[in-house]
Image 1 (cartoon, rainbow, N blue to C red):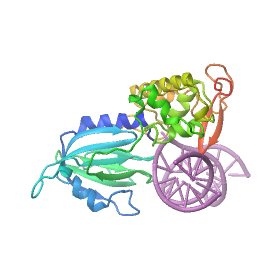
Image 2 (image 1 turned 180 degrees about the vertical axis):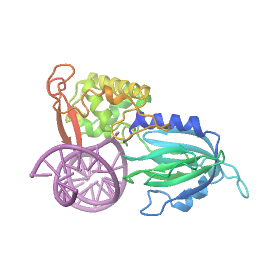
Image 3 (image 1 turned 180 degrees about the horizontal axis):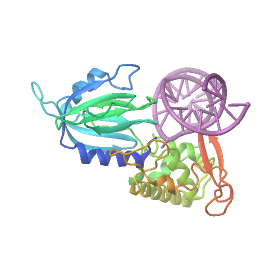
Image 4 (image 1 turned 30 degrees about the vertical axis):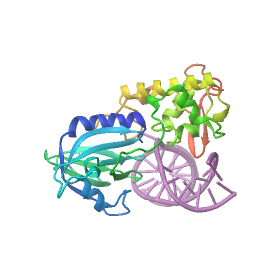
Length: 277
DNA sequence: ATACCGACCTGTCAGC
DNA sequence: TGCTGACAGGTCGGTA
């Protein structure tokens, strides 16, 4: 589900609602755990921690925690603890009243000092929870902070299709299938073009497109395709602005040529065969 | 080192 | 009505 604009929208919504609140206790579901750290470790770090900030890093939601009640002496690791949530395709974080119905596929509940609960719901279980002691760094360049030189350097010498490179989170973090297709359309570049075959001018255009698409999508609260809603349960509106994603067979908004859909390394890719070279 | 490809899960929808 | 297969916003690990 969520790419950079959706995760940014969710993180902002959560920041507004839970910053300053304290996690009193944590419940984690059993089953094949959607956890990267152990359940015990996560509970130990979250419980009695104050949420100092909520922010987005790539497609991750990061809760900066301050240990509220540290037993013997606070250590540096304690002071910098972070709770990392990756939503996968269908993950959601919702702030609920305790009496609100617990949805199917709820895998984690954090009880807050304010009386509310922060719940993690994820039908497909592709999301992941973890805790990190040091500074969380998943690698990759933040697209909205990228300058042209660093952007071009990411792709130098790569023979992989530019679409695949854009989706590689170790290179650029936060861009997913929708925004890769939309950015390539705006830049006039076919998704199968080898990254190494793209000129400097085209990269400049591509970086501009990536930033514009992401910013516009954030301004509209992200794209809601089937079930995405933000932290307040509101849908986004950027899906109404999609020019190629999900428009197979429909006329290109620029030249009327039918939009094509091909599969690149397992992902649907949409483009206009006339506008994109 | 790099690049595909299936696996991981559940749900939904189209077609028969 | 119900079965099957394709597909879905993402990543990871194994293999070539």
